[in-house]
Length: 447
Image (cartoon, rainbow, N blue to C red; front, side, top):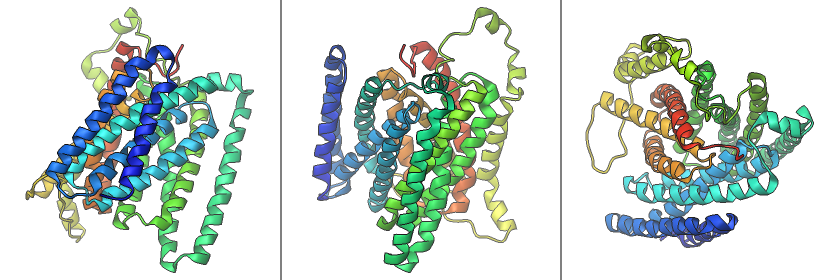
């Protein structure tokens, strides 16, 4: 067993159990049963994984690191959608650092398909306990999500001053690290460092933008185009960054630079998103109220809705995904290139045609984007069952996506499908969340 696994798992259990005591007294009893059930389920999952993968040292480490990673993910997601740049900075450092480490473990473990079990169990433990800790901080410091309310409380646009200060501090820290790397690191690390800085900045700037904006103005088709464009641009940066790091085995020398630059990008993205939200009057809970009866009666026929400007983006994305999946090999032959041999992260050795692999991974990427949009929304709202259900859906598809990247680190093959499928899934997930949250009355800001 990996020497880090036991201490990390012990830390996870302490944090998970401690999260119960962050709740008001009346809510603790139900929460403690939930946390204890998850912990027992986790140990059962480890036992089953050990039976199926005897001698594999990465199962326990995967449970521990994925628990910490998903705890960080839900923490940064909630802080990104609230009103404190300081807490968001802390959460971003935590989240980006743990993602880098968890992907290093996944890459080292060779993306064994049966590591899916501890990965999903880690997602459940981490996100459920992370929500409780985040809610405690939000209650204690009175953090809200509505940007207009935040500006009224904080003397207008002066509220953004801390973001500028934090950004300058991180720029200075990043410059200092680059200088240190030139002086003390091997020369062959300079190019990867420059690539990681450029991609990490763009990736997290866009991730912060799309995360906040997709959570606001739900149910309004006029925002679909901006969400789709941001999602596609964010997918480009994410898959370029992720495949580059997988291809280079996540070098430890880049860990600090990656964490600093992605946090800087996140803070800049949050700052810009707040400006957009105020200008476009986008609120986080406006879709919770049911439309009035006369509004429902005035809805146009189905065909008219399908070709409406806000919906045309769906047809464009679906057509693009199918064209690349079915005809990419023809494209490569026309330009004189040899298409890569693609494989799927499955339990048994199978030989599948290139078209089948691309169609399957396209479906996985769409489902991952749908479930990610849902889990990101559910993690920010006040309904535990909604959140738990989406975690299981997202955990499985996210593991398959990352496993696919680990064994197919080929940029040309991945990016076209990833861009289109990610944007399509983001829009579908956003649409699905509207009636679900309206039915559950799952709000972001508690009244």
